[in-house]
Length: 508
Figure 1 (tube, rainbow, N blue to C red):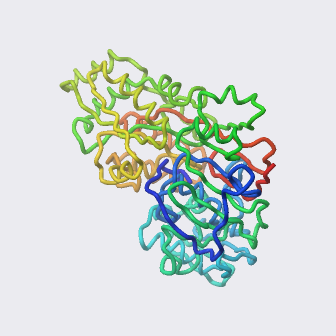
Figure 2 (tube, rainbow, N blue to C red):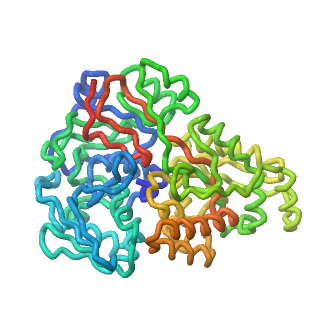
Figure 3 (tube, rainbow, N blue to C red):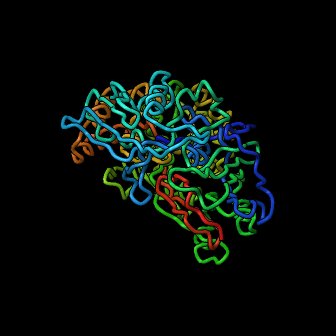
């Protein structure tokens, strides 16, 4: 959950599945306005691409998986500091190289099997050995061992101050039962320890049912239906009409007017997310730093932010938002058409330049923002074709490097490494643009093991300056989290990392 890890805001493809819970399908459309008498219906903008937590990087998948799986530790909802989950406590050796976790002894998976240390060893080694999406999080882990059923020991090659965030920031680090990948089709089935079981999923919704034996106590509601409603206006209408009871797909232009509404309860908070545009270093002329800097100079971030998010975001030229200790106040690009044109002229670049800008209609703000950027680049001789794709195609083309430029966001970032490391280090797992700068590599590698906060911030500041100057990412804005729910719904807490937890929700 960025992602989520810093999570790429991604979703793709329809799923048709029946979960491994062994329960009967639930009726999610009987009484109570479309969700059953005690089933929460949540309107989300996009459907999961799959349900293997160790493989997916799609935020719509983690909206669901947040309620199905657990990690050893978990971010506190208030300040995102790490607190116990499947591990009830931990100790660190004096040299910082040995972390010993004591596990809860009252936990079962959804199929009734008991959770123990072998499941942790299996889950972590699966990510490491198969080099799955989050294997980089174990870069400093020499071994994962289970001396007894209630103890897990991680031995490190060097001090890793953000280890807890690495293993607990989002459900990409979920603990699966031993041999789960052999016993289940994890793309469509799940067997977690969380408060809800995955029951079914199709092109219109995903259904969860309450797990009565959940170690944290059975949920108050009988289940959750995630219903996919792409258009924010339609999601809001469904909430106001009582067809759904919760949504995070609120039209940004209506946030101010909704704040005084009696029909919905609206909540906003600063996020740890960012939106950005990136250009393909393998495709001329975008391999030319003068072209990238000209584009960064022509883009008016305030105008883009206003069009895409109205008042529910802050323009930013770095990744980390302003209220963070690690915020770096650096904004070298002022919107200036003449200066942008001069950069191209001085570099001997011939215009017009054609640029495809890849966005997805599953997240309409990306389309809006791209259209504004296209209008801003046209005067400097860059003709932008906004390519609006379904997200299955978008993800495939990103993976293949088949783009001139794309727009996306990273969600759920907690540690400063989440904002920068894998996106900009050479051959990083999310460095789709093909950026490589040895100085940045050195700074990010050093920062990952620096235990002093001030020294660590200085290293990330240095790296961020180079990343911004090189326009590895062209940062646009930090959005607010905006969510709304039915009046009288209780037990839900909005979070800066966008993790969606429904285990304590009570319906009105």
